[in-house]
Image (cartoon, rainbow, N blue to C red; front, side, top):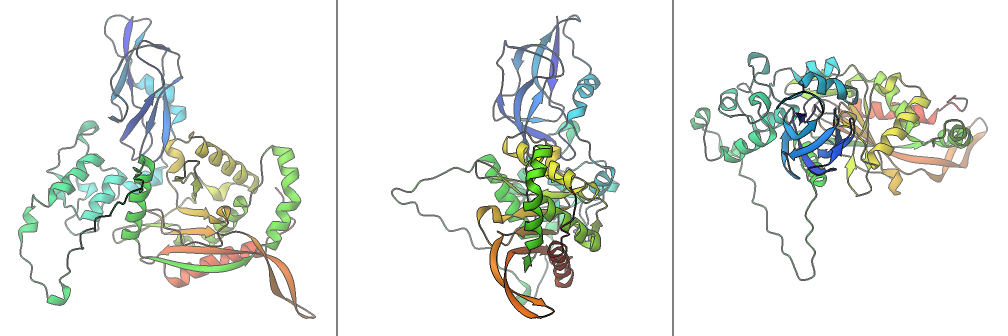
Length: 442
């Protein structure tokens, strides 16, 4: 008999740790190769971890709600074969599970390896051997943490890397531990002196009020929304779109498509097709901001905001949406939506979006003002489709007819997207939908 250490596998670029949600087996249970043994949660998504070998669980090393680092042992299995206290080689563990891990695209890695440049003395990644995950990078940028300060942080992650807890702990204690550069006295005109933010007022709780603790996902969403508003100056443009052709085409094709492919044909593939075409017309919408640098994305990866049964929100990503046919988009959308609602997404399924669409019309809303998912610079919200009387211009004069109308809301980051670009992009999406070809094949 031999002992095998079950390691927490890689969850994708930038994911350095995960929280144990629950074990699916107990100590003493026998598990089969490729069987899911534990549910974990990252800051992106919940997922299961399979075992690459068969054996009996003799010790669980990480209990529920504990945090494990990537590559750290979370359990010890007793396997057949071998001798003494042995550990299966790590490459074998990776090979067994590599098909379940989507590797980041080269241009994404290249982007993440670019230096931070929000401040003159900020940490320069290219001139240091320190590795920072995207989440840690964002904290460094927001808090203007210098390279000298970073060198004082003792990382608790794999190979001494700085984790989310390390950087947040440093920020929390930073107020009481001044860095040398912060000890300089700077005189500012009275007009430039900013008052500190007013402390949050305590919330009164009355008899009968119910206190509900936020769950983990809601906390992540709350932090992301506050961070986005803090990072990006939001501007929102609106347009009312005549989607009569779209509705007519879908009604004519949805039954035959479901009969042929066994799937529903929703409006979302059509919306995404129009957005992809507009991005190709205006590629500066498909960018991210890193300090004073604009990163123009090569790939068009569309995030699709999806409401979960528990009321939370997740954004799975359709990779390379510009390379998919209308039928391919429909299949990808249905697959991601199903797996999102059944907690079957992998961390890679929620990474790499370059533009996002939110369908607020599914809730009966006419329009909304969506918040940009960082580090993207724009997001589109589509409202409910309703019948309305509209003035139609004909060769015989104007007439009033019943048309299918829908509002679209386009929020964009005014640091890099001006009103002209944001407005023209939205108008092009509008034009592609209004001029939808009724002979389009799927």
